[in-house]
Image 1 (cartoon, helix red, strand yellow):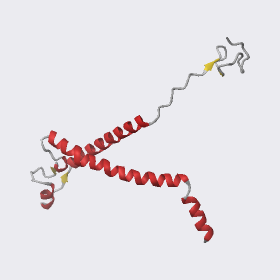
Image 2: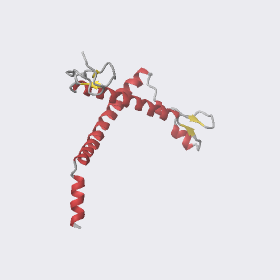
Image 3: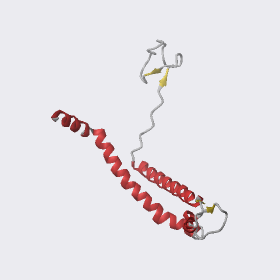
Image 4: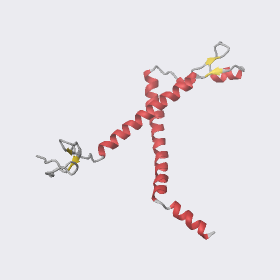
Length: 145
């Protein structure tokens, strides 16, 4: 039994397992932030721009009669096609994806930009890559200028 716990300890303390656990926790917290940003800031602004339309409440009663709400149609025993909820979820997805794009874009600005790599020198005869200070091609032995 002691060997089993030693193996588990070795597994749990590996760097990639800890990194993954930290990533899950940070991802969960970041998910809460983006959800709040969408629900508490962007969706009210979108509602203001669309004249207060609540997309989540849009539906079509399958008996083609008019009902004041989805709940009223369900209470009457009528099936509903809740296309508004689908529209709401698509809008949430687009806004969350846009927020993620902005965050990744901002994070990339903080990263150090690597200088572009110089194109390798090629032998004019055999087109093999050669050292910059070479006077002969190591592949075809041609003299280089």
